[in-house]
Amino acid sequence: MTITYQVKNAVYVNLTNRCPCACTFCLRQNGATIFGSPDLWLEREPTLEEVIASVDGWDWTKYKELVFCGYGEPTERLDTLLAVARHMKEHHPDVKIRVNTNGLADLITGGKTAPRFAGLVDVVSISLNTDDPKEYLEVCRPKFGERAYQAMLDFAKEVRAFVPDVVMTVVDSPVTSPEKQARCRAICDRLGVRLRIRPFES
Ligand code: SF4
Image (cartoon, rainbow, N blue to C red; front, side, top):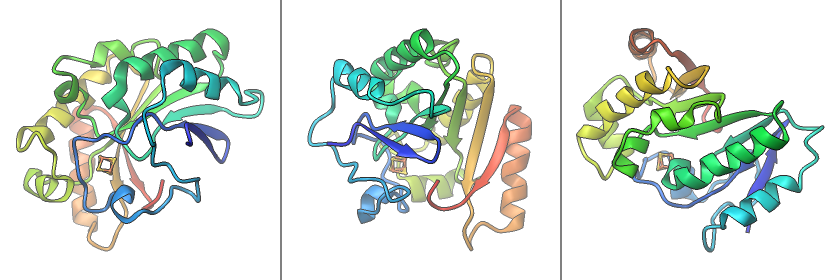
């Protein structure tokens, strides 16, 4: 099973298949791979020890970033994620730590999670997807229902105080009009985070 994999000059960590969303565009839905990565579907979740052993297997003189991102939502395993990040900070402090997330960690864990990222994570990249809460519900289909969109925005705002770089992403597609992008930018400006319009598979 693939616990870690390489994308350009970064090593990605695949912690779980679990996710509280069922996005219509999710790569899991159509069996596609990320950047031609190996099959990321996990037969079982790797233990913390297995993840650390896998991370330690890479030559960290060659890679600049460790990214938590797989088929599932990495904050479904927030304790493990942060333990791996701490291990990296202790052994490879020059490597940047990024978490790609749907921003629903508070709802997933049932508590405030933003402070827990302090000193361990350098970049949090949150999928904003849309400026429209109704469309978010239709496209991302979070099991938490209507409260998910606002919870994601709140998390973005709060984690900014603990993580140096917070970015929200919108997938560039024919339905993402310039007007929609502008509205997403306005949301990010209000929250004090960066907006990244990203290609479909990154
Ligand atoms: S949040 Fe990410 S992992 Fe979860 S269903 Fe959506 S695209 Fe897939």
